[in-house]
Image (cartoon, rainbow, N blue to C red; front, side):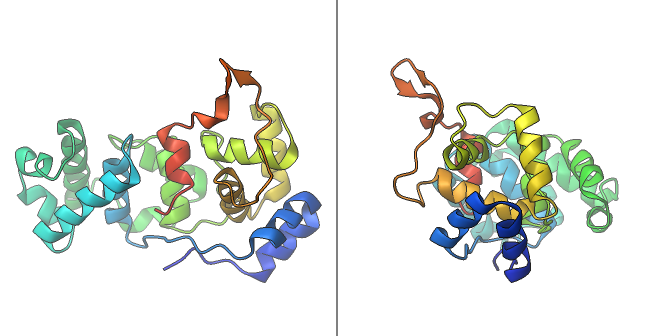
Length: 231
């Protein structure tokens, strides 16, 4: 399953921003995988923090092979050493068991979160152990397919903004200007900015000031890398 968007969102963004519109024309339609199951999406994101996408996929494959389906029941039936044996840290094993326990007890309402507005859903997700604001935003985009997600904490989005609009730095005020411009379809704008940051448009470069002989944004952290990849 891919993130769903079409002519309505594209035409709106092109009308609001000619520069982004030219980028959209060059790249074409983007197919980004999504996970419609909120429980597995949360587990998947906790596992994937601060590790490569390849390592995350390996751990997830091992879990699927062992459990068949990753559910609250299967997570709670496993002890910490068994979860660690898949390749995750002790802390991540604790986090996913805590989440599974909250889901099973009803302390975390999986069904109810889909009915909350973005800011409340992010707050609820970020209250979980092992989930921060950025991760909550990515879950809203790549699981719940919310249309208006634009994460200031995502380094790849900041990089994409610098590359498209020739900025040296993206501060909060400038970021919010673009958020207002792209809303209510910030999620689609995010897809294209991630693509740009990943090199989808030949010849586009990062205008960030050089640091220590290297461009600062070439040293992207795990969060920026993960967002620009399939989730």
